[in-house]
Length: 88
Image (cartoon, rainbow, N blue to C red; front, side):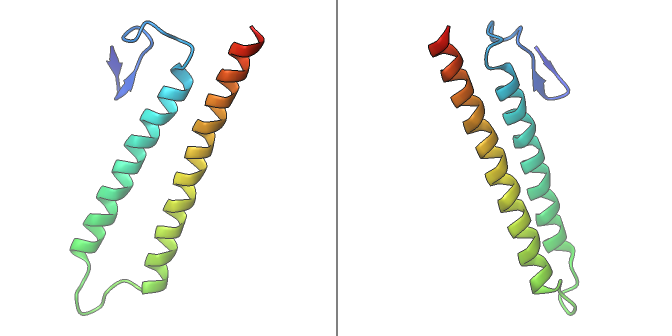
């Protein structure tokens, strides 16, 4: 079952990895939204007065930092899951 683009645990039958999956699904949606906005911004900028290059590089660096942070969060959740399984 999907509600607002987020899969519920009913559809998978497993609730152990639901927070990780939900975070990944949300990140994917946010990432897609960011990329759509970035492409729209590039398509609609004035060719005679383009966006400042430093500002553009700054936005890309911020996006990369957020993506790396989200990947670390996913990795930590997987490590936590493995450790929990080993101690159980």
